[in-house]
Length: 507
Image 1 (cartoon, rainbow, N blue to C red):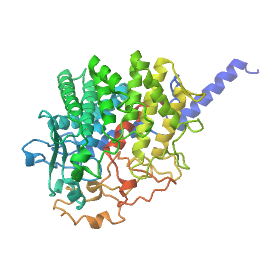
Image 2: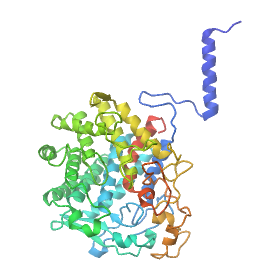
Image 3: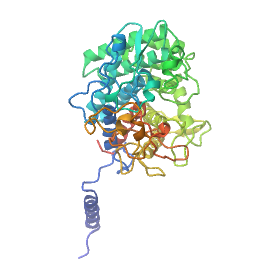
Image 4: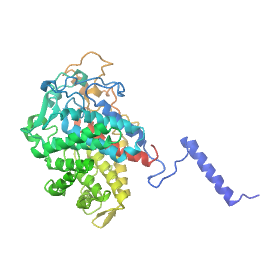
């Protein structure tokens, strides 16, 4: 007897489901309305885990018993003693052994923003992300413990860079640099206020006492930043330049810091401050680069949320300011100005370009979230750009970083079958203390630094500076432009990966 049409359909469905089980070992995921595709080309959950783990490899100070990057040991245990203050802890910014307060604060702000927007999707990684934030804020609280003073650096960068040694062996001067009323540093002070304010929101429900301490300190630090104006790049030039010289001025940090304090406190004081000073602080400037130096774009996106989602009508201009930035990224639109490599990577500059890829991707998925919740789109000179388009662009950038590129190279260490082997990182490149207990002297490590041998310690999750404008990557340890990781490359990536992992049903 011929089978009925219904039976044929059921049989076909059963065969298809069985095939999926055989191929994948698990049933096909049902597609929810927010998911891009049924299957992802990358394990975003694995990348998320590793992107957060990286911060444990950058820790300075006394390491806790649950430290997971076990080739690292305690370091910098007398930091601050030169000025009789406790500055133990915090993060080494990149591949050296200096603690720079400016990028450390920005890293903490961006980790906090990642958790505030996408922490609800992180599942088991949320606690690890919060611990990474707290490692930063515990240090920033120490650095701001005296009124109208911030300790902004530990270590002499020039002398540190003259050595290639493990942080555990460090014997270079642990010079302590501070800003105060007489030596102002508005950019680093306002960024520190932003970090403390953003983190206060992260801990508001789980640790209200700590949260209140953070926001109280943020308020006083911002007041100091605004009252005693001046660039630390001028007053402390010989210590902080060219390493973290602020080239964009301090106006962007004041707007950014006020935006975070407005979000954290809801005090009308900060809304008034933004309304009165927004234009003079560069709210509508067309500087479309977001990173540790320039925060204008981040402030625009952040303030657009207050208008789009919280309906603060007085901030309606920030939707336009944010849209202008978005339109600059979209190829083919009238105001498009972004450059992309032949392989499709956003390219801003030779030095540590991947930081702009991760920060931009984060802003795209975050702005898409705000637009979706307010049922809005972006209009780029007549071309309508939907939230979905923003997410697609962000995903393409993250996928390139994870291996979808001409070299089939993952730029995250420890992720995928092929990743950088010779990253510009002292602790990773030299034998660990466990493997080589004897001290490695200042200049002794340069032989290894200049060698072609792979790094013995895998700094899992580290994202390096990345390829050049032609998608080339030499994987040379001496090439710090392309081969050095940094905390501020990873911090915004955490949010994007959490979003993507959730979108593809991996969390």
